[in-house]
Amino acid sequence: MPRDLPLGNGSLLVAFDGNYQIRDLYWPHVGQENHAMGHPFRMGAWVDGEFRWLDDSRWERALRYSHETLVSEVRLRHPDLNLSIAAWDAVDFHENLLVRRFDVANLSDRDRDVRLFFHHDFHIAGNEVGDTAYYEPDRRAVLHYKGSRWFLANVLRVRAIDVKHERDRARTVRNASWTTPEEIAATIVHLCSDEAGVINGARIPLYGSP
Image (cartoon, rainbow, N blue to C red; front, side):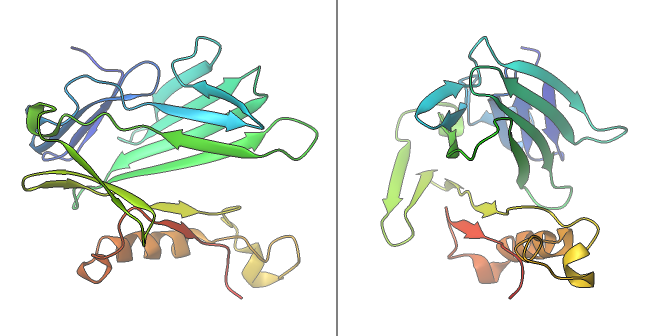
């Protein structure tokens, strides 16, 4: 069925619905081996003990593509959580890799504990029979696999993206933990390399250089 935001490179196709949930994940051929089969991959926000999935009707959503690109540009806001999320997604042109960026804004006038949750409802190779989720205690990671199909996820955690390179020009207490786009890109390139094959399901903090 039609999807609101399809992203692909000819081998990997990821499609989002109107609630900004992944509904289709094709690989290694578009139209063949749908590893989601229309089941939603849910995402939710938790703020100081209050939680909402993205299919909650109170979310205000704007889903589009960035201008003249195949990069999604999504704006989300929930009045009960007093929270907004800006998100961008892209499937890499050369690698079978989905890259996602989330900028979370606390709209309250006080500090709060905010967490994002991701729920994967895989139907690997087109069905759920034999799907396995393996918990790796040393890395505190969950790997989804069946047969020759493995799905790995890593998270880069940044406090702020230093687009203007203010940290390098004049380091302050405020910008010391900021991360440049080049540092983020270099980390993603490393995670795609053979040398990073053992890094699976990790949460990697990138809080600037010492």
